[in-house]
Image 1 (tube, rainbow, N blue to C red):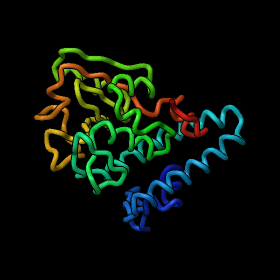
Image 2: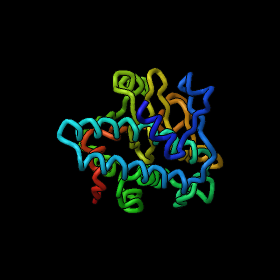
Image 3: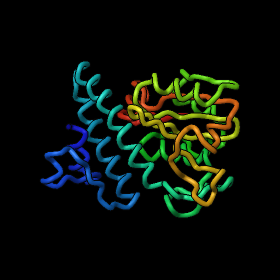
Image 4: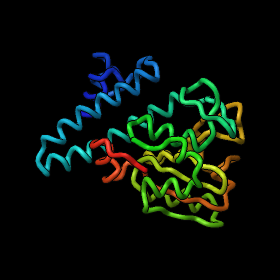
Length: 230
């Protein structure tokens, strides 16, 4: 419940007295800039606690931040849905302009609070970019999408970056729900969307897939400490 309390305090989510008893979250209408500012405010609170904590406290705050980042990134996705795709799209504002797949990934990672070179990373080969975040990756070459789905079924809940032959996006795994979130060049008029892994989409059709999990322990620690990625 600590994450829920922090989100309510910062105005990122709200709970009415009726929904509190059911642990249901109601997302208020915030501008994207307000939403990002509130994420930054929460990070500052965690950073202050971290710097004052002993080793056990630091460990607890890192693990807490991992959970917070997984939750808040799901909310960032909702802002970006239906932002149109374009190969040269570089918008930084959901729903305004267009965004390419690599820029979608790096913008989301930056906007939850990571100090990354957004444009430089967006133009890298997806595997190179993913390894900058998580050197431990899983690769699939010439495997069916069912093999990839079975892999995710046995992985922890969380958010993953997935690089394909000529595309990159996220996979969100929550229990039995496994979704591909990406700026979709198959449907450029829709652009950013969530869909099943199996279907008429790039992750289903790819012959090469490389996967790295976001918000691992060291990544969450870097987030707390404002450490810069090169």
